Amino acid sequence: MDFDLNTEQEMIRKEIRKFAEQAIAPVAADLDAGETFSSELTRKMGEIGLFGMFVSEPYGGQALDYISYIIAVEELARVDGSQAATVAAGNSLGIGPLYYFGTDAQKKKYLPKLCEGEALWGFGLTEPTAGSDAGGTQTTAVQDGNEWVINGSKIFITNAACEMSMGVTVQTVTGQREDGRPEYTCFLVEHGTRGFTAKAMHNKMMWRSSNTAELYFDDVRVPKENILGRQGEGFHQMLQTLDGGRLSIGAMGLGGAQGAYEAAMKYARQRQQFGKPISKFQANSFKLADAAMEIECARNLLYKACWLRDQDRPFQKEAAMAKLYCSELMGRVANNAVQIHGGYGLMKEYNVERFYRDQKLLDIGEGTSEIQRLVIARNVGC
Image 1: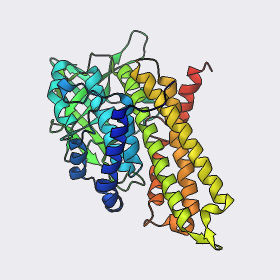
Image 2 (image 1 turned 90 degrees about the horizontal axis):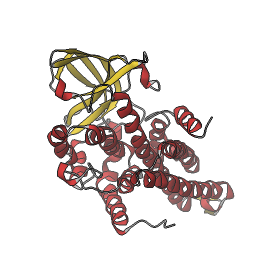
Image 3 (image 1 turned 30 degrees about the vertical axis):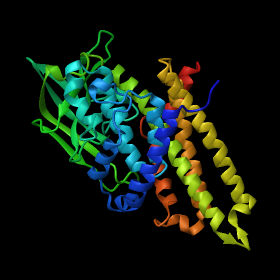
Image 4 (image 1 turned 180 degrees about the horizontal axis):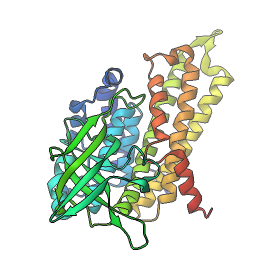
């Protein structure tokens, strides 16, 4: 067994960490405070190749393995969850479905610009009454000649309502299967399509400088060529997309935990109480020791799940485990990081406050912790 990263993966970690510390860290707090999505920063992330990392070169990607992509998300999250969210959603939820399920014409039309980081694409699944119950989708699409007419709404959709948003993949109900269950089909809807409205959501607790949207479809007409894959394949596409997306959420949890741990360690070594650094007190040193141990466990679990994916082996169970463990780990580490900072940990001048807030979304997005436990339970035979 070889646990070493290869030379290319090590280089990616080094370069993305350098970029995150030099380009993101100085502006992260201000962007968070102003709830400002930065197109400039997003384009810079595109320029250094953070979009389309796993996409083949003919479509504008870099043809890297999934572990390399996950390392990039991890390093961004170590500094700022919002920018990591933009990249994670842009790849796993935006580019991924188009790349894995789109026709050659669809890939050639959209992927080059998305892989360059010149535009973003959303994944419209969650609805006001259909979150964990993705099968409760109420948005419909009805065929009318060579067109489909879409009606409904989506909510909490990342990268779907900013100046860089190019369009969305939207899951709809297109009929009923032979077994009586709904038939789901995904469609590609470009911004500017008549009847399609995207509205940015504000006043968020977390990921305040990422873009989150509500989507409305009012008799939106799209040609039949805008079906992603084939009619009736939407639910399968959604499940496969979420499996990959869980790995990127796991990377955000791992990276966020690493960042909170490092901030707590730095503060504990500098802060003096009773004549010595507070890192020397067992109450704090045990918190830091536990964090170091669990981060190591999380990294091995996440990277194994990514390795399975790269080997084209089943990874659904491991993806759910990695997402669950890494996201909840960040909660524990961020909580202890705030505790180590004491009163200062409650102030926005210290990054641990932002890590503490940003973590909560990880328990909810890409399937709640409860859903992950359900997936794991089913996979182990419960």
